[in-house]
Length: 352
Image 1 (cartoon, rainbow, N blue to C red):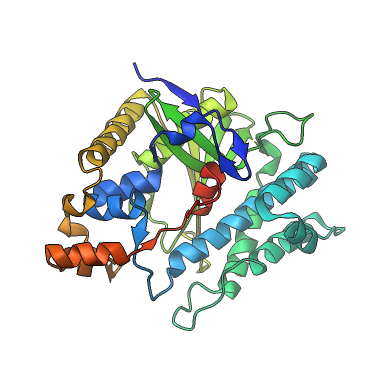
Image 2 (tube, rainbow, N blue to C red; image 1 turned 120 degrees about the vertical axis):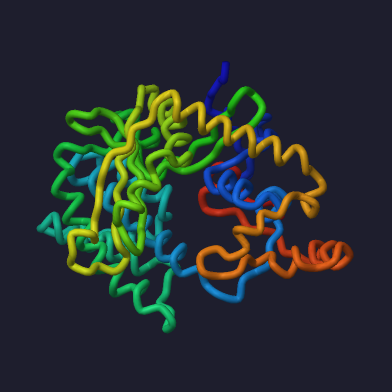
């Protein structure tokens, strides 16, 4: 029997000090990368080593920036639609920081104008900046996408509330950028950040997952039918909300709007026990690989079908193509991989 519980997180000076923090952890990204190519994934995520790229990953950067917009609109909904101003104040600062919230939120007489203004200010105060080589992922296009997103989401806010764990306590968890650390069988942890938890007037509590994409067709939609990311999030969501969650509402939007019906897409995915079993098999397989090659990741299997990913050669090509001696020298010269924002939210500040 598999057991699940939330980690008992204890913090001191910005770092985790609880016993659970010593257990090995995985996330959706780590699972996918290790099973895509064990050598790459283990060195990148378990040794925390990488070669700094000389190019920007604009798709990831733009996606991250738009996720801030998605969070901003849900925060606005807490404030203006659900009337939980104290919750808005606390969680907006949690996500964006006090100074940024004060600079970005301005009351306006028209609610749509106010929501758009807040989202635009969050978008333009982020880290993303235009790249001359990419005319698709631009601030101007992201502003147009923000308008489409705000209009689509405001139309359903009256029947799709943001989940709030305690309406009397503004510091209690709410369903916006909700980090989790889940202990499985007292052996390993699964971590991540749930984009949103909503309360639908008919479907009840369900998760929401935002995605940005260059296309929103049937192939894109089908890619989530059995995706482990959603399955793991449902298990964690059940623990966080103490509710029998079975649904994930997927919300896809294009970074560059084309004024077609394919620019915005939402649909619901379901998860049941068979999905949970498949997720756990893959998670435990990933952990077995990690244990098998612990301390010897240079000799982990190379899955060469993935040497070209996202239209670029893998950053480890030179490492994997070198002699054993060259690989050892290159390995020692690699930089430490920084924590992602999601990892920092669960693990604390990097101790590098």
